[in-house]
Structure formats: structure tokens, C-alpha cells
Amino acid sequence: MEGNLAIAIFNMDLKAQIDHDKLPRHIAVIMDGNGRWAKKQGLFRTIGHENGTKAVREIVECCAELKIEYLTLYAFSTENWNRPKLEVETLMKLLVSSLKKEIETLTKNKIRLNAIGNLDALPKKARTELLDVIEKTKNNQHMTLTLALSYGSRQEIVKTIQEISHKVKNNLISPSEIDEATINNHLYTRDLPDVDLLIRTSGEQRISNFLLWQIAYAELFFTETLWPDYRKNHLFEAILNYQNRERRFGKTSEQLEQ
Ligand code: FPP
Figure (spheres, helix red, strand yellow):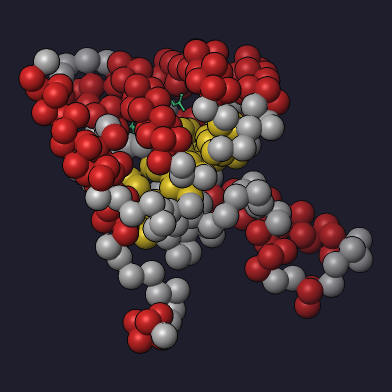
């Protein structure tokens, strides 16, 4: 009890320091380290993923409390299909069970579920459950929670170029008309603003084919914490760090001051 109280006070301290006028509009997270978390304790990797869902719950709840508008989670990459069959099956089962379990929380907190990636590649059960929750939450307006599933940023860019090329071929658009907005409007993320803060857990410092176009001006935050251990105070820490950065978007500090 004493320990819990101490954590609660520590969290409150960090939370109290957050400037609510300078919140990132869009936070994206590369949830990494589930396997290492499990291995450290002599457990199967799949147990790491199960515990990863607890962190997902806590961070979604925390973002809703802070009134973050967009949260995007890298849940399964196109490359993750190459993992052992049992691990892939477990991740898909966890997706289905989490969706079933969390629909009430999403509804209560007015969170809209969204998904990006090659959803056709998902097993039928996972895709059906996902589309059902997306449909049931489509009018919620407090926060958009996007799950990147069977997602790869390069594949997304290839798909975008193919779609635009078809339009050029059919004289629906001319090459000189193609601009950044054209590209944006063909990405899976067409309804989302650019990412402001990208967090990666577990000490790895790379992007791993995640939202390459959308993070052009994002602030990057890397933490040693393994995803299953990630809690609200870790998110407060990342947001506070973000709020102490100067986002110049190519301008000078002096220009920003004016
Ligand atoms: C990376 O850890 C994590 C994943 C590939 C999957 C993330 C999935 C979850 C947190 C659970 C399911 C999610 C939802 C949205 C219900 P890793 O396995 O690569 O860890 P390692 O680098 O330590 O091996």
C-alpha cells in the first residue's frame, strides 16, 4: 500500500508539471521489448505480449485523461509476419480478446478506434472484430486511437504512388499538380495530423519502417523501459521532455520568438 501511495504521489508530481496548452496533438508509440521483458523472467515471449496489453490499456487511458487527440500504436509490422507461427497466432488472439474487452472503455471514454496497414492480411476473425469495433466507435470524438496492424511505411508509400499513378494515367490529375497534400491524402493516415511526439521503448533507437512520412517534424523520445513496464509516469516524463524542446520546423530560434 505504501509503495502504491508513493507511486501515486510521484505520478501526480509529474502530471502537475504538464503544460496543458502545449500538449502534443498526436503521439505515436513503437511498443518494443515485450520479448526481452519475458525472457528476463524466464517466461515465454507470448507472456510478454500479454503483459504488453496492460501497458496499452494504461497508456490509452492516460492519453484520454490528458485529452490527447490522436494516439497511434505500432502493434504489428509487415515484418512481424515472419515471427514463429505460435507468436503470430498469440498476437492475433490478443488483438481479438483486447478488442472484445475494451469496447466498453472505448465507448465510455468516447474514443474512436482506427486502424492503418494492410488489414486484408489479418486473419478473418481479427479483421471482423476490428472492423466491428471501428464501426461501433466511429462517432466518438474525444480521441482517435489508431492501431498500426500489418503496417509498413515503405509499403504504404508504394501503395500511395501506385494510386496516384493510376489517377495520372486516367487524366484525373496531372504530374505538376502533385504536392505534399496529394501524398498525404493517399496515405492510410489521411485523416490524422502529422506526429508530434514519437516514443520508442526498450532502448532501441530506430524507426523500423513506422510512419516515415508522418514523423518528418516529430520529436523523438527513446526510453530504456520495456513496453510491459511502461506506465503513466513514463508517458508524463516523455511529454514533459517534449514540452522542453524547441520545435523550429526549419526556422531559427529568433524567428520563433518574433
Ligand atoms: C515488440 O516487442 C512488440 C510487438 C511486436 C507487439 C506489440 C503488441 C502488444 C503490446 C500486444 C497487443 C496489442 C494490442 C493493441 C492489443 P518484441 O516482441 O519485439 O520485443 P523484443 O524486441 O524484446 O523481442
